[in-house]
Length: 541
Image 1 (cartoon, rainbow, N blue to C red):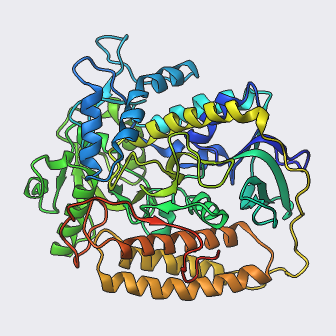
Image 2: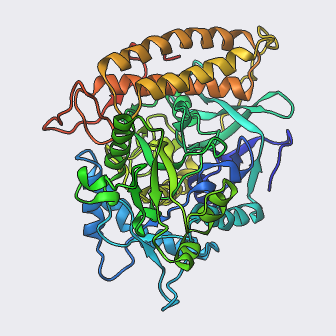
Image 3: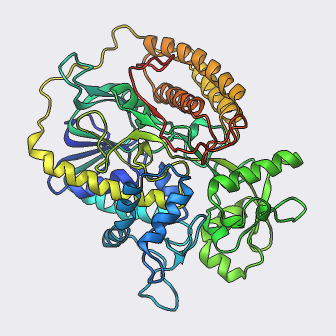
């Protein structure tokens, strides 16, 4: 049930983030454990709610697990962990069946209501994307949220922003075991102690580090930043996926045009109507996202245009309305009838393939901390996530983490005493405009210098800027009471630095990381692993 009251804040399992991964884990453990879910706002403001495409799973007799594995490995450009890919793909049918049992309704084939309609998206060699029209995330959210709200062992608290994890190391005690979290209640302005046996980081990615993004405002990398400050290794942060097709309109902000539209015949065109993707890849519009995004970026720079077009208007009206009702309705709000007109689109930051390093159970380097969903780096995506594998990963690793937590539940106790948050040396801020300016500056230089195409010079410029901003943010954080905006800025700046440092470390072009200084791919694929404690200017350790 939703709750913003300051009553008991002890839980067996504390989940920070309320997307698909967090809700799934909550439902998997709630029959045996007390669960608290923290959300910065209502559930429908997370990335899950806005996911359009679907969930990749092998359900068709003409498809195979081996094919799904190979497609994923190819898209990941040599950096995927085959063991993780095989494990994840093998549990696809189980995930779909569980979601159906939770009330999620997927689109069925008209001719045979016993079979799901399967879409084909970029990088996939078969139709294997299960979906609910073009609003799969909303269908998943509505199904899971209804179950979460009705469960007596689950407390859902809104207007709560996690400040940091509390570990024994931070308390000056032996080891590095997580015992809870400091959490800001936005209603009261108080920072409260939440004790927990296990803490789950399910806060999503960090695409708000970029000026143009498909993500909601809360995607500020909170879980990744908190994990780093707690002592977790971070991997492959240089691989930021830019979705090729976001609606280009001054009032649209961050509306995504699903890859499924290209899967159903949508064509990318230049302003003069010429198709161009075949010049970049024989798979055309269905090439992996990194290739399509770079192609669009290249054509925009070549022609000096602000966008290209995505055209589905050659398909019958009833086909478009059946498969893409959400996109049709949204575009009409901006005066674009996709049954008659081309859609102006532009690439935008969409997904963080890197994140907190975890094992097959979602465990991090810090005892009793798990990271699932986009916050984590499992090894599934490698250097480039294949379309619709992300929701699959959410469920597979939520299930795995839940299984291990339940197995360990009786052996982990709540920590006895945790110090309250110390506000004795801070005051109320009288210059919040600094936060807004710093936030805007980070997002602009990340877009300009650490975007789709990079160079050593651009990365060094970004590093110089983030070093200065980190000093300013640390000064501000140490003197003023925390707010949501300040906490998000602090996290965003740290994650931006992790992205820059990772990009500077990789001396090749691979997957989503493309640099003009090292255009070739090295013969051996290696993960970029950053470890807390190593010298890193401005990291906020």
